[in-house]
Length: 78
Image 1 (cartoon, rainbow, N blue to C red):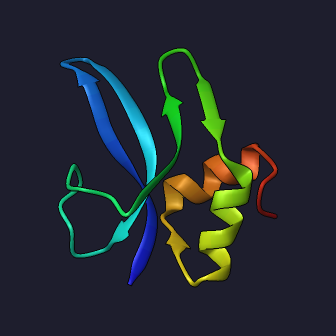
Image 2 (cartoon, rainbow, N blue to C red):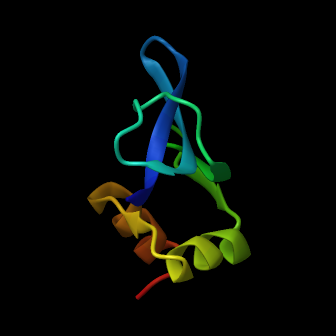
Image 3 (cartoon, rainbow, N blue to C red):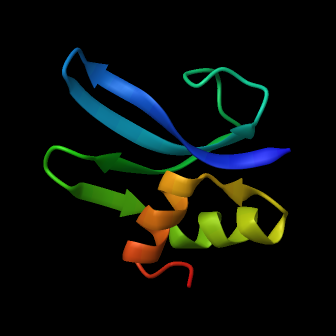
């Protein structure tokens, strides 16, 4: 099953995340199918590629709870 989820990058105690599309059986920091955005929780900065996210949602990818709330805040999904 395809999931839209966060992949952790950055240093120790300085997390940053990439929004990626990957199989739910892959490791959290494993190789994604496609990267579709990023989110920095410290500076609250985020950037999402809306067309790619909507394409993957149409193809059946399901967002995790955290990703779903981020996309709702960005008004990408309702």
